[in-house]
Length: 178
Image (cartoon, rainbow, N blue to C red; front, side, top):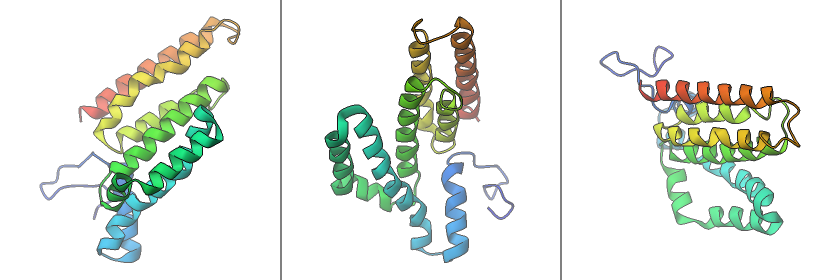
């Protein structure tokens, strides 16, 4: 990151994992070049996943479900292991869970910015790891909720949502193919 962008020695730009590379570079700048600095961003993403899992679990399964999900992540050897790696997996997990929280919020609250917040998160997911592409089909879930005529004032809202979702999927595909 000498030049502000993640580039390889060949001069090619490394486009995978930008959402993780910049916090890692900042951590290295602050804490110097050591194992702690490399692992700190992954650990923070992993730690941030715990309260987010509680929020998601509470919305889906009640308070007991939210607590169970959070406790499971706190004691999971798998979660602890990936939180230690200086890799993008814990960040992908965080963004994926944030995406599904955003989808729930978009289905419940049909006002801006919540309806389009999942679109921003899915792009962030793709800049976290290439597996973020697998979130794109779920962008259409709030559109199915909007189709309910009792909740939608006009069909134009549903059509606009479909267009934005389709454009986001195409943009994600283009980013993925880089």
